[in-house]
Length: 191
Image 1 (tube, helix red, strand yellow):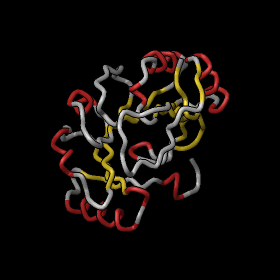
Image 2 (cartoon, one colour):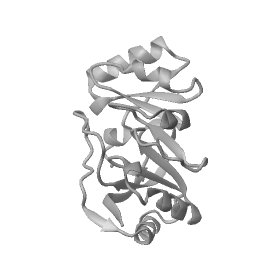
Image 3 (cartoon, one colour):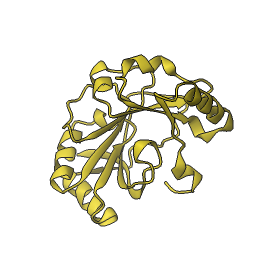
């Protein structure tokens, strides 16, 4: 059984796929305790993989993109089976992870890694994109852990003006490597 916080249909508001319709599956629980976390990833229900896929179909119809997020989606034992079932249902799976739990993922799964307290080198090497949270400082110390071709987004925590300013200055200072990612879903008032 999967531990679920919520399942909803919206638009991706961050990173390379910002603006793309997606069904979000927020799995409950996380292996970190970040001070700035703005996500409720508490346990709301238990569900079988089949029921989760039924809910994805009900909410998103034929929307091809499904985003597994949390908390930390790779902390649950059934996540890999969920990925396979979603792919067999014709879905393109994206995962938003903190990158701490080494997991062998199918190559066609898009992996966004947002490092916080620590990072597993296997997950850093596998990342398709990186999301660095700017919270009173730009955490550039993580850059060396990711390949030069991995897209790196600076995301101001809470879209706060002081964090946005820091992120913009860093992006302008390193225009070949860094990109700005605002939480557009929050700006337009959707989940």
